[in-house]
Length: 363
Image (cartoon, rainbow, N blue to C red; front, side, top):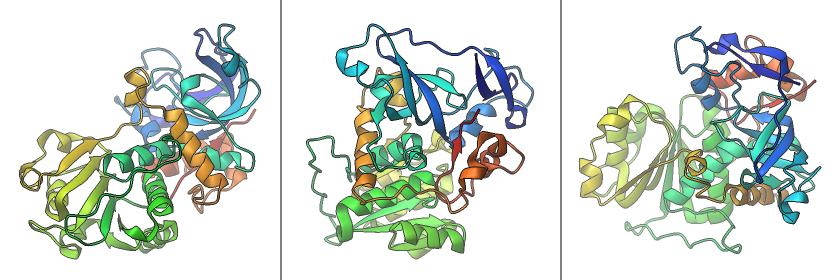
């Protein structure tokens, strides 16, 4: 048996500890049993917990969220390859399959294709920031023409010149959160002064945070059209939208998009059903979407272990730092404290955390 932080009813306030949850066992050749040390905290945790009205029974008993983190490999399927057997007892960074029990638990079974070894010198709490937010940022950057992964033999595709003849500009809508912080740092670490990075924010504290992460400038969430050049020429080559693309917001993004520019949408919602693509079409723009779990659902289409490895190496080399929130403290991160009202879980759900928070899985 093991201890978990789960619920049998939908609603974040129904989260509670249970000490009699069955400890999972590797059953497939690619399965690894991991003793969780830190779990990544993300807004998607709250989305899953609140999918149905408060108090609605969950369909499969105890529902456990948490979709990434770090831990120690404790056991491996007997059918695993020799290379996979070498992961035994290693400390690893992992992304979790959302169809299975999550990482708000002492143990989790993870597919080895979603696991990479943490190099010496990288703190566990830093590595725990990577799986959901870090991979999402990396994949977004690739979709908007700014690849940063070194999985291609250490080579990065040269940046595509802006049709405007000006410096390539990246706009991140909602730049102060975990994904925005990672995207800013990763893009800056690879492209340096060859790009301009603008972030939208909602407060002076968020402005300061984004500049600290490497942004050149910040603008208010509701001033995209007034602060940036609009019209046929636009002013942004790459746009990562980390907010729901409402009709008004998407219209603003279409206005500031440069010809042949690229937009990546990360948050869905009702607005996604009625996007007006007219001006994007006129500019021959590209609109992509990003969900970090799509690769898992498609049979591990992307090598996300290599993506995590790329970010871990960037941390080890000092090119980026894990964007742990200024509010993060190890004592407060223990799951007994994090689950309390106003604790780290609630802070992430508020949508106002700058950077990342992770939760320590204790006894």
